Image (tube, rainbow, N blue to C red; front, top):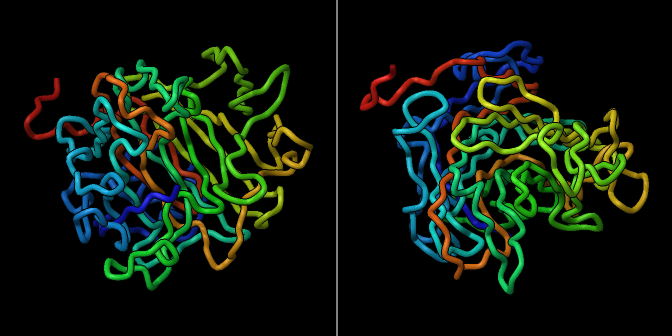
Length: 364
């Protein structure tokens, strides 16, 4: 399904010539690095815009929050002033008991408010964010509708950017694309194994194909040879509760509808350097596999049925496909902070740097 979302989030916008960031820095310094086109620190109320409100939310704006489908419920996204990776606050999604797939709505932003940077053939984008998980989210086995285990919750969805005619009064999926676009790239806790995995494409001949490799068995994180079905940590890189982990996605489009694009994912525990865990690129040491033939040896396939659309938007969305709305579970939470979008690889956060506490909290 395509999820509708949208509204203006006042974000720090910095545009410079692209270069590769070389060393770990704090958020403000990373935002000032060459290549950065947008930063969102979730430190002001403006970052949580609701746009037109009602069930439409920010859909039609350049960024903001969209409530759960068909509702006007904005209670499940919060500016949390008691928890932050950096600065005075973060974005928190609440996942209550007895909720279906669209557990809390979505927050999104275009890469730039003026739509000046979107990614087509020969172009690339790096997206870094910090994310925190409550123990309840990682320890709960969410059931599927009809029995079994639900498909797993998403972290982010990188998808098509808005057209210039997208607005609050003209919010439709043709000009304000939603999450499930042809060439979407998704980070997900697939099948709830508590480790990030990826897939791409919501359409075309290779829709929803997981980005995996093959060594002695299927490797769900091919760059570290994380083996199905045991998922041993290490070498697998898993989620850890109650810490600010860092994630960075790199998407470089080779040619639409050919096996020559790059999709990569780095992950870091709080205070540790990032580690490349998924590498579906032409130069990957441990090649990806599409499960059918050797085409993925030369990169990943990104589907496009209309090349006038380009990659230009990122969604923060704990959507959980096929989740049983009747299952009683503990209330769970996930937090996002320090979103950076760049044309160049983004440095890791400074190891050991303590975030600024809220004014109501004493730091010891």
